[in-house]
Image (tube, rainbow, N blue to C red; front, top):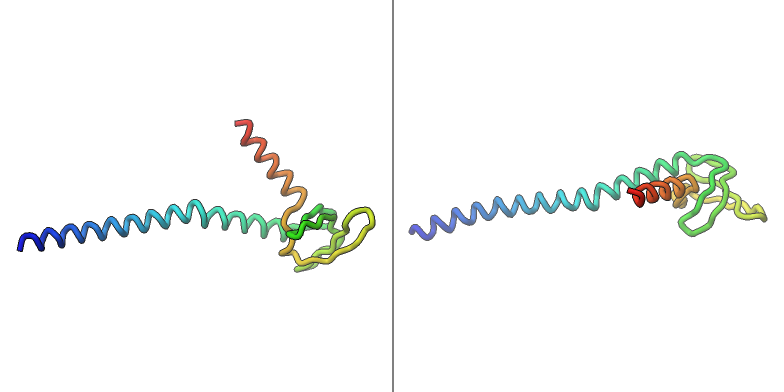
Length: 113
C-alpha cells in the first residue's frame, strides 16, 4: 500500500516539472523566434508606410529604382537611364537605400565594439 502512495507523489511532482518545462520552452520560442520576427515585420511596415517620392527602393524581385509617385497601396518607380516606369504594390518593396545604409551603420558599430 505504501508503494502506491509514493508513486502518486512522484507523479504529481513530475507533472509540475512538465508544466514548468513547457512554460520555459514557450518563453525560449517567444524571445528567440516570435519576438524578433514581430519586430522585423513592424519595422518593414513602418518603412513601407513612410515611402516618399525620390526614395531609392529595391523590390522583392530585385528591381531597383527611384519612386516618382506614391498612392495608398501602390508606388510607381523609374528604373535606370531609360526612365522606364513600373507600378508595384507597396507590399512588394523589400528595402530602401536609407534602410540599407542604417543597417550597414549598425553592423559597423557592432564590429567596432
